[in-house]
Image (cartoon, rainbow, N blue to C red; front, top):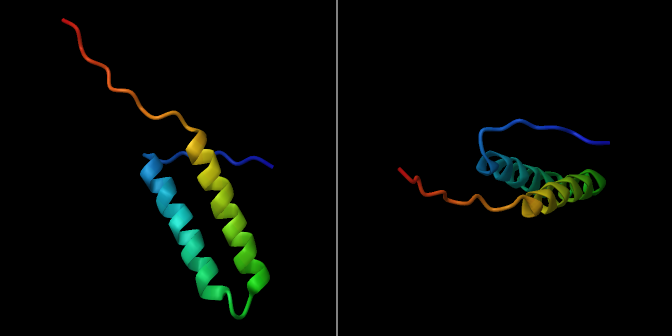
Length: 62
């Protein structure tokens, strides 16, 4: 399955990843399967972020 997210910046998506990891930590003791699922999802998103090319700075020529 694929999901398309439209966010203002990659920083916002990084915050989503951090939130998933925090949520995984919070439920680790009482729901380890859910915690593992959240970590896998966070890792998958992080891997996809790593594939995005770094922005390049363009100099204006007048």
